[in-house]
Length: 172
View 1 (cartoon, rainbow, N blue to C red):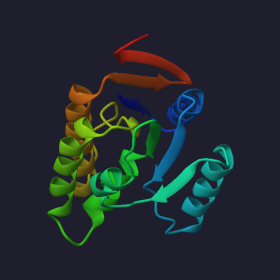
View 2 (cartoon, rainbow, N blue to C red):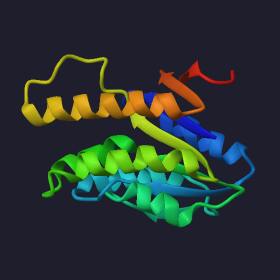
View 3 (cartoon, one colour):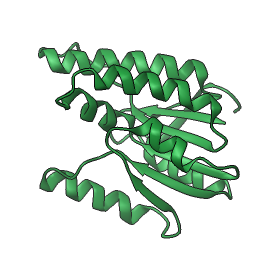
């Protein structure tokens, strides 16, 4: 089963994903895509780490998400990826400008064949004003395209607002 959980900043999406993973009763592997490049991000990462159960496995992967998913895939486990927003930022800022398109397609190709249950967390970026800068517009465009494609292959899509999940696709 593939779940996509979307929401704005501080919408409750990560908390929902973590609670869903914990309630599954499965072994959980948490894939973190963030890079601790500054003090503020280091603090955010530390906060997220304190929220997670100690028995969850942690994998840090800022770029090659599809490859990492294939490496750790197994039956009777849940993989939680938090978050695709930071992963997209990492790809767009990478020196290899073809990496973003290549890695997004690899992710879309790999997900349907995985044995693990998957929860993908990402920020919904299409609800605000159109950004003025080129890289910001590209980020919004590429994130939106990825979310649409993931929504098509996901079994369940949830949108979080103010801590409340709204089911867009799949079981209630």
